[in-house]
Length: 458
Image (cartoon, rainbow, N blue to C red; front, side, top):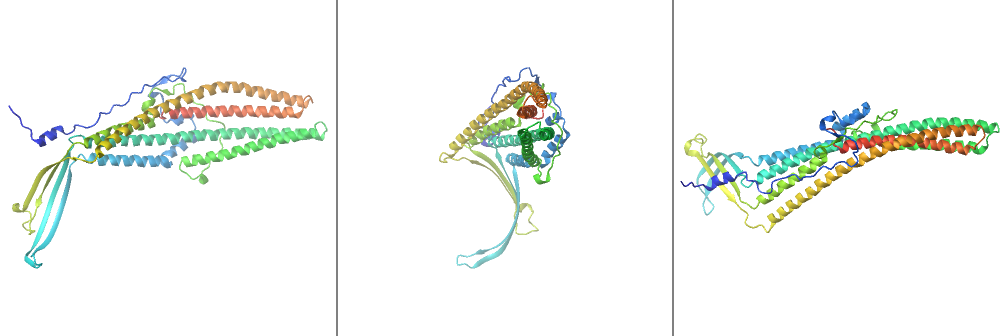
């Protein structure tokens, strides 16, 4: 039995055969974290809620909530995502038939060769409907839709990345501001102590027990500490301005109250996720752009093959409105068009090479993004481990500096040492206290950076 296939039927059977390579996500083995130590590898369900809520700070939570509605970078990313979704809709529409309606009316009279009118005046009414559809024989339309779908997914990941970036910057800026407040409170307490020391030294000078140099040294110590506190005020103002911009407010209209102490350092023993490649939005965006670039190779490849388009039209045409929709006035047509570009000067070949190069670039960008993600995790794990050890040593140093100050002040009262010893002991004690605060704030910043590096919400 012999079966004959018409060209149109064969084209329909071939429809959906996609040109270009099939997409395969590059395999990247997730390495064991060198700096993880005895940290437990967590599962995604180990954390619930928003990642920044781990600091248990109501003011911070309220500020981060404003990012979604007021941060301009996040709003721009959201608009870009909507645009990508619209472009996907346009690409999807290319695979569907187009239907057009037309209504025309004309009035004409013939003209002879010498330019004089001949014959009667004719009225023509012509309502018609036409349709066309391109069969996606080689998968060009499908590949283009695939590329736009991947781009839309990448744009969505960009939105998540913008949100996470703004949240991370806000959390870290807030921690720095709280650390600044704690440093200012420490300096305020130190200034009060130095003022008492200056008054005592002045009294001793009046009594002839201390020299003028002791008073000068005490006053120098006091003024230097007051200057340090003013300098912290400059940094606090800048941090407050940065937070204002992050929450979409003008710095002039934004004010944060001075807070007491630092947020509690969260326990992150279970915060190390094993699914970094799936959870970081920047990695997800890079992977989706890689998929889009791969689909574009198929689009370029399909340009070598002929395009098959089916067209149809029908309607009525008559000079009389009363007889317009009668059977003799009806017309229709059906047809197919097979078009192939025979020569383009090498444009299609260049377009394909460009698409392949773009894919290779996207693969390299994806791998680099993954490597950068692992580096961020390692960096902050190392910082947390080292700062924890440093904090223990610094606590001992702070305690020793406080004891040394007490002993030196007693010795000065007994006339055994000069006031310069007191000044040195005071400076050492203050430096030790400030170092302790600095280490604690750096541990908080490292914890926030680690949570951000792990992708934020799980």
